[in-house]
Length: 162
Image (tube, rainbow, N blue to C red; front, top):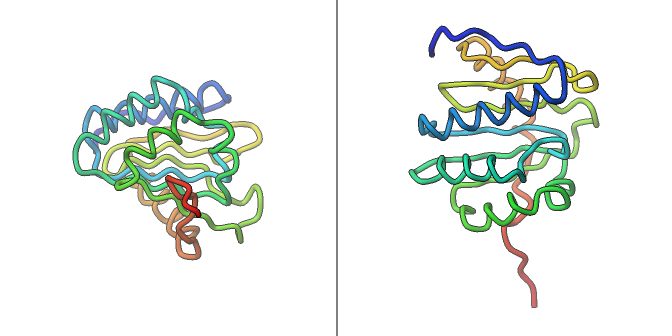
């Protein structure tokens, strides 16, 4: 980890910028794992062209991306570019749901393992931090693990049927 400063997040715009910046950094440095955790990802910029380009750059080597949510309805509705990207890269993308966590009780985190984390501690007022600190990474991993334990694979990349 570097000694880069912690960036405080105090608005929706700053949250989106922190997510974009963290994904760009993960793509540039080739982080092996990215974990995204949110109630439904409805307010994340997942479908933006620049964000898709970061995912594309990041995915070029052996990687793992895990999305963890209560449900994926908003991803399908609001982020069609990401859904299309995911079809191509489904072999490295896992979408897991834990509907048992109450609305508002789900952590909102981006974790690029070994590099950077973005976490909102107050979802209503967009208060949080972007950090390169190992302590923050550990805290984020613990929050993700607590939700992950009772999650199950969901949101298939392609629809199958007769």
